[in-house]
Image (cartoon, rainbow, N blue to C red; front, side, top):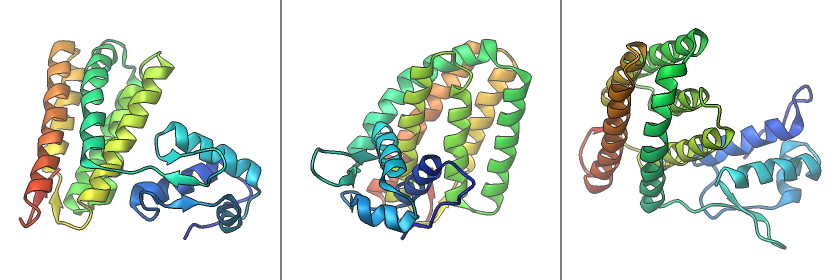
Length: 227
C-alpha cells in the first residue's frame, strides 16, 4: 500500500508526505483506519516518527485521531468541499490584496513557472498533475503573508479542495483551460499591482470553482468536465 521511507530524509517528514499523498490520491479511503503497528511496518519506521506524522495530518484535517482507537482517514462529502471553498473565498480574497502590494521578484517568478507547468499539464491532459499545480499556485500566494496562521489555514483549505476534486471526479475526462485562464488573470492583476482587480479575479475564480464541481456532481453522464 505505502512505500518505505528513505534513510537520508527526516522520517516524520517523509511519512507525512507519503500518507498525505495516499489520502489525497484516494489510495487511502475516507473512513479507513491506520493501525500504528501496521503502518509503521509498511513504512519501515518506528512508531515515534509515525505518531508525529499522524498528528500533522490531523492538523491538516486529513485524519481523525481518537483516544484508544487507530487514526482514521477523515470523511469527505461535497458539503465538506463547499464549506472549505466558502472559507477560501473569505481568506484568499483578503490575502491577495496583501500579496499584490508586497510580492517580491522571487515569488513572482515561482508563480510564473507554476503557470507554465499548468499550461504543460493542460496540453498533456494530465489532470492529476494539474490539480497538484493548482493547489501549489494558491499555497505560493499564501506564502507571501506574514501571518503564519493564515498560511496554515489556506494550506488546509486548499488541501481539502484538491482532495474533493481528486475523489469525486477522478474517473471522468476533464479539461483545465478555465482554471488556467483564471490563474493567469490573477497573476496579471498582481503584476499590474492592481489589488482591487486581483481581489475581484480571485473571488470570481473561487466562485467558478464551486460552480464547476456542482456541474460535475449534477451531470455525471456528460463526456467532459471543466474544473
